[in-house]
Length: 344
Figure: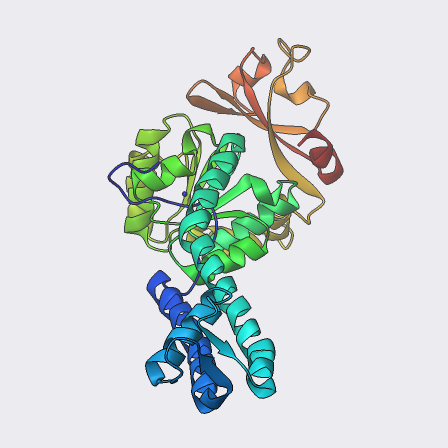
């Protein structure tokens, strides 16, 4: 949850009940317990004795109740009958304990808990490095988190940012680190330590919001890879201009699979096999090794090389540039699933 003159963010799920409602509820509960003790003493006021003037008025009962509930009494008013003493033993004493528990719990929630939350957030932030930030936990965001976990990512190393409590509840139940906030704001992404993240996945549900998140994120973390879900084809170019490295259009992807199926019964299934975690083969990206430098892409032994990335350019396996691998090249290859799991 990082906070001079701006809204603070907490890397944890917030309570559903507003603070003022919880405070009023506790005050009301404490008042109800004291009222039980007050009316019990008033009903059995004949069992009390005032050592000052000998008379027991309602104010005397109120005074005796408050002193008894909050302390052990001063001895100026005392219970003298067995019934009054039993009432103090079995009703007032438990009331006193519950009232103190309520007061201590309130002090914890509104004083100590804030300190604890700030300390815990500091600890979480200190250990956030190489994590994945997911902005938006709707259908696409939830599927992305599920896929990351299937591919071996630790749930704690995934930070989900969303402003909906229901979405955060679901994400936290999956074991991820969650933060309630607006990912279009610098403060939220800074609190999630975006600059130290391995990647950012943007699935806000609306193209304009997703593009604004990409724009904000790119300004804060120029080198962090950003993937974004865009629904409209017209907005794909805008998302790339905003700084997204990968733009995914679910409708276009579905169209590719459907069109591929018309050109061969197994084309679409192979594409799905490459994209899913439960397929026999997966696409794997890695840096070229020193032993591969100088050799063509077709001779790598770890998988079937499809493409290399050299600087800002990419080359397919059919292009001349792939005939000699160079230091710094990134290789995209199709490998067996068990091999990908070992090298992840």
